Each structure stands twice: as C-alpha cells, then as structure tokens.
Image (cartoon, rainbow, N blue to C red; front, side):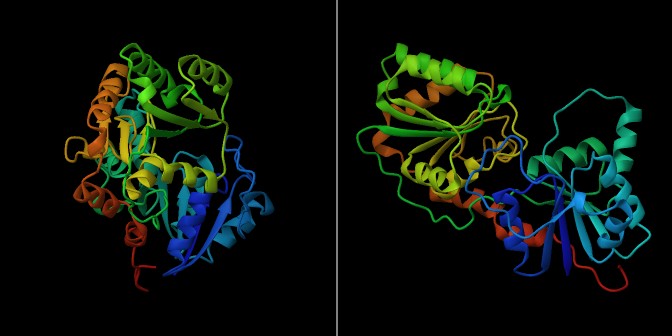
Length: 345
C-alpha cells in the first residue's frame, strides 16, 4: 500500500514511523515546515521527503490522489479538513493523527462541529490509549474508527540491569517551559535537601527553552550534584538514559511523552506525573512507572525518599516492563494501518 504521512516538521520520531511502516508498505512524508522552531537538533539530518511549499493547492491534491492512504497530522488544521473532504470523492482513504488535546470548556454545538470534523476522515489515529479513550467518550467516535498509533520511541532498546553504584542516578530530559513541571521538580528537591536526602542522588537535567537560565541557576543553588545542560543530540540523550537508574517526567500536561517509554524499554525506574498521557491510563495497574499527582511536589519527594531508603533493591518487575513495552511497539504502528480491498477503495 502507498501511504503518505503529513505533519508539521521533520523529527527523529517521525523517521521511526517511516522506518517501521516501510516494513510492510511504501511510505513517504510531507512536511509543512523545514525544521522545528522549538527542538534544537543540530546533527539531525532529514531523510528524503516532500514539502508543502513546493506544491500549489491543485498540484498537492493531485499528488494526494496517487496514495492509497494518507495520515494527516492534526485534525484541527483547516487545510487538512479541506483535503479530507475533497478526498472523499477519490479512492484515497484518510486518517487524522492526534495526541491528547488540552481540555477546554465547550458547548454542545462546538462538540457537534468537532465531531463532524473528526468524522470527515475515515479513521482517527490516537497517539496513546488515553487519547483513544478521550475521543470515544467525548465525541462518541466509533471504537472501530479510532486506532492507537503512538509516537515511535526507541523500540530497539533491550532491557538492561538497573545497577546502583555510589549514588542513585536521576535523569530528566524535558524542555524548560511552563507546562513541563520544573517548579514541582525543584520544590520536591528542596524537600529532599531539608531532610538530608538530596545528596544521595546524582541528577542530570537536559533541555532547551526560555526558562533554561532561570532553572539552571535555581538547581545550582540546591546542590553540586545537579548538572543542568542545554538541548542535547539523540546519541547523548541515549547515553545519559542508559547510565541512569531513575527517569522523571514531571509535565503538568504532556500530550504524549516519548522519554518515559525509552526509559521503560531500558528497565529504568520511571516516575511520571498523571499529566503524561502516554502512560496515565495504566495508573494503579502496575508498580513501574510510578505515577503521581502532577501538582503535588510532596508526593514526588516522598517517592524519591522511599526509593533512597530501598536503593539496594531497585530492580523493576519484568512483568510491568513487558506490559508497557507490548502496548507501544512497532507492531502497534503496523496494526493501526487498515486493510483495504479493491471494493473499499
């Protein structure tokens, strides 16, 4: 099947989509921008792709008709909605891809309009199980039309022993913007310092963003064991992740959340807020990841204190690790792609 993925900009995780889907299909990508304005990759090289600006509206519509199936990134973009409506009159099937939306108050009319927009595509590809549940419940979309299609993390990672040496190593990889929860993190670290527990941890934090300098200074005041670095490339990110014992993802709201999945794949202890939508659907079902209230710094500090007490027994349960990695893997992506016969097309 010929498949086209359209999305905002190139990214390593989009390349992984293409790599996995190309196992069974002929897959291309079309981007609206040449690069991300927020994610500061320097060594990343974009693979062959098409760009929206290289086509007129009419030429792009003709281009779309050469594909059997198109996944449009973003059901809220007016141009994507228009293309989905026009492609109804062709043999090309369509899907909108979406991660978890920020919740907003809206009346019945707005909900009705949004439901009709979503249904203008043949399928809805949801980034997480929580996202799927949200759209089915909120907009009464048929279960058969909503498929889990996760952002592709590092599926190839193999589980590793989680060995503690002198100090417990914590790793955090998240941009320094308001919704990423750094205020909660630093308040929890202050609690650790008050009870003389902070120095039991060796902490590495990486990420760019407008609040980087502020938080770098705040963390520096707390302990020499906290190292804050700017945006790093994927190879360095993987090196830090493998060297850690604990990964923390503290976002107040995270529409998906790739690093926690990488950490689970590597058998790390994963601590995430309930705002991280890639994992919050399994709260209370498994012991790892450990999920806490996104606005409660004391709950986060208590989790870290408890870990420091039993640091000699930090091994994660293999059954928990297996549950998560089976939810999000290459086969999850491949299963999402519908099978069409000639009568359906």
